[in-house]
Length: 97
Image 1 (cartoon, rainbow, N blue to C red):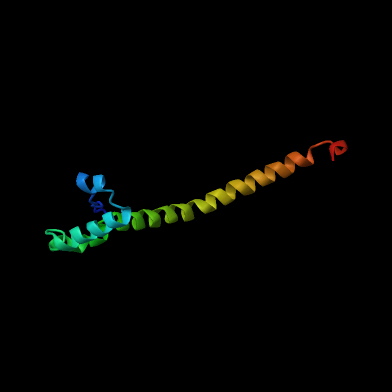
Image 2 (cartoon, helix red, strand yellow; image 1 turned 60 degrees about the horizontal axis):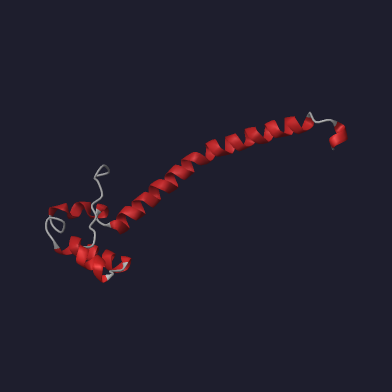
């Protein structure tokens, strides 16, 4: 289901007051989705959308895809700028060179 929204959990205030680490929070989040309905039942088909780790991985993939899509346009702009610069340099008086 490509349009499914991500689902995450966050530490309770007591855990934050205790000073829970990011890794501990991720472990608790993994346990939450593994041990609780409906996440471990019929919604488990969407488990790739559960948790910060999966959200981070998905956003990384999307960012990489966007970067790859942008490369041809960036290359074209660089080539145009280089061409314009070469023309401008060619028009400088010889005394400056």
